[in-house]
Image 1: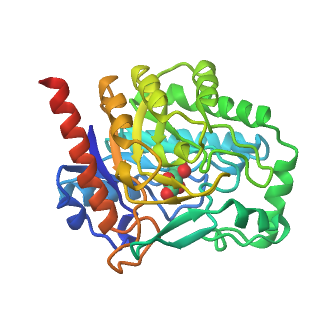
Image 2: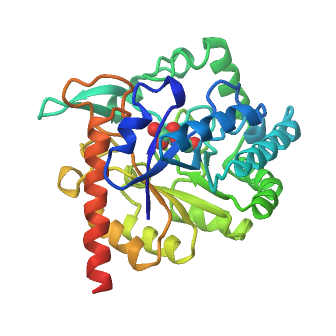
Length: 348
Ligand code: DNO
């Protein structure tokens, strides 16, 4: 595996120098952040990121994300124009040595939580989702933590209305249409596409979601069989869905060579419905057996990129929820330990 760390570019309060000091860190996962969704990234911006990484002794082989414009998901408006830009972006990042692109196909909202500051018993705080609080949210007057600045009230209502006519089937067809144009470019330039699962893995506000479980993935890989069409196995996202057998999924998709990127974090299921909170990375902190998941990956030939996903906010760090340095660095150290122990045992 190649251990990586998400870095939000020059605006990130965490320096590349700090990231470089985390044991076994091979590179960063980053993106161009100052271009509107759907537009082409300039070669200059990508090269700039790459040279900053080079100077710090870190690789830049993974992009998270090249975001997908809503017109591509709804299949109307200027979808072909945006798909063309997407293909251009793939060529541009590939020219700077990128090998893997993470993206998602969730309508309107990417991840969704009901609080960014759930208080944990140890005094840390973390992101959490309460089913009860979610039911209280009024789609006509939405205020969601983390999303309030992303859309104006009118934009949001317009988007929700647009999706009212879009079924799961239609959204899936639009994803296949997109991939049928993008994957040939990936094959040409040697880039793996790694779709990120729905987070949480179910429909929200009647918006369709189509990458929530094993059946969804099977359908996607059957429709676009190239192995360039692969997955970001995000344990926290799939793991919030209690019907998802993560160990089985990890083994299955690793053996197919489709797990291009791995997000490792744990979640703790907190009630009998769908509520969960994000916890420290190790198995004992939450509801997922991280060791069994990593073992299933290693045993089935996984050799992709890994990053510690969301950490708790500890030691009064503050900063971007989920993306502080301290707990993600602890997560990275834990991930190193898991892989080392499992690989050692396997190669003995
Ligand atoms: C949240 C992340 C997601 C992820 C996108 C990929 O912290 O896991 O925002 O980057 O879904 O497109």
